[in-house]
Amino acid sequence: MTCAKRVLVDVRPLRVGEFRRLWVAGIVTGLGAQLTAVVVPLQIYEVSGSSADVGLAGLVGLVPMAAAALWGGALADLRDRRRVLLVTTIGIGATSLLLWAQAWANLRSVGVLFALVAVQQALFGANSTVGRAVTPRLVPPELLPAANALQSTVLLAAGIAGPLLAGGLLPVVGSRTLYLADALAVCATVWAVWRLPDLPPYGGAELQKGGAVLRQIGDGVRLVTRRQVLLLVYVADFAALSLGLPTALFPQLAAETFRPSDIGVLYAAVSAGGVLAGVFSGPFTRVGRHGVAVAVSVGVWGAAVAGFGLSGTLVPAVAWLVLAGGALLALGVFRKTVLQTAVPDGMRGRLQGIDTVVAVGGPRVGNLLHGTVGAGLGVTWTVTGGGVLTVAAALLLLVLFPRFRRAGGRGGARRGPRRPPRRSRRSRRSRRSRRRGPHGHDVAPTTAAPRHPGGARRLPVRRTGALRRSAGTARPPRRTPR
Image 1 (cartoon, rainbow, N blue to C red):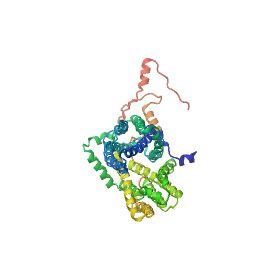
Image 2 (tube, rainbow, N blue to C red; image 1 turned 135 degrees about the vertical axis):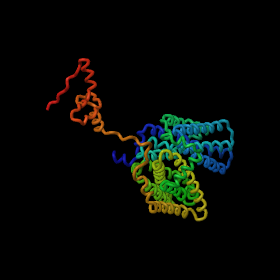
Image 3 (cartoon, rainbow, N blue to C red; image 1 turned 90 degrees about the horizontal axis):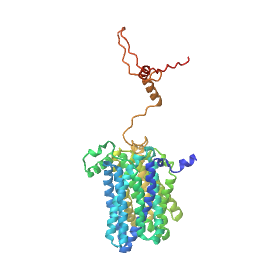
Image 4 (cartoon, helix red, strand yellow; image 1 turned 120 degrees about the vertical axis):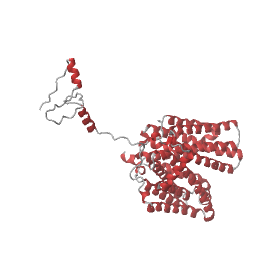
């Protein structure tokens, strides 16, 4: 049993009631969000009949999500994070209701769908940023890797189960019902956030700064450029996603190397590897050197991508992608942990906002690079070369930056103001013995004896005993046998 606990995912963060409620609600809300993610492209294609409009919908939501992530991160450091999280969660549910309303009214307008997608993606960017800044206020620093692994596993599992569920329900209930199901699923997270305690900035110092949101975002960017560890974490994540993410070449690989029907297996293999790594994340979530863990995850990711590029049959290709998905989950877990523990609580929101921009922009740049280079050099050279470059980037991080190797070795940052040290039981007993007399009666403070030899010394007065003697109920002193 002990060996199984060490191998399987560490569930100790679920002992914290607030985090457990958010995690369970995230399962329901994640499935609902995937229903909408499947239905919206289908509806856009039904209305316009153009795949270009479906691709444009992703671009329409990208810029608002990145801008809202930066804004939400700054707002999380200035205001009560519970309120910001509650407002953005309710906004996501309201947007799902509006999507249901336009489907029920049969508007058949691509412009309305684009506008609602942009609003929902903006709210999602702010919500996810604030949510990651809330986690360190709920979970002890030593359990943050396990908490991040639990949350990442839920997101990846929802990414697999949600589209399958949508594909089974869509012919039966239609798109309107799926929009409504998403709106109802958001209510679970609204309830969990409502149950959270107030999470204002520590000390309230950030509220009196008087700076605008743009100024706060600038402070976060300057902090990243001045802290080598933070900057290198972003560089490692961006290098892994831009150099080693081959998803843009999956259609060409399925057509030329495998079978066209295998494209779904290729996409699902990465997510399946992440889910498996999350289920068996017990060993690596207890690692203390988070900087080394980030570099190793990047290196394993690159090596697996290179092996995938050299695979000529489906089975070894899927095995390499499963390994790559596990490394990608580990990279996300340790990246979030470093960003949550390496800075004070008043800067966590802004750093999470920058992290959202990097996490969103890296895959887009990777798709552009792989699509462009793959057209000129071929699929095999592009995928394998990207994996080799990713491994080289990981080795450079470990060799050239010793401070990055030591990141996380001494534990995380403090959750908030330092609490006064608790007195031991022995010190409390000695303190009580100083306050009481030999028979358990209260003792008044004594004054120092005069230095001249003839002076009288004031003896301690037993207050409780004096009251008993005045009432005639004095208790005789206890004699202890010698």
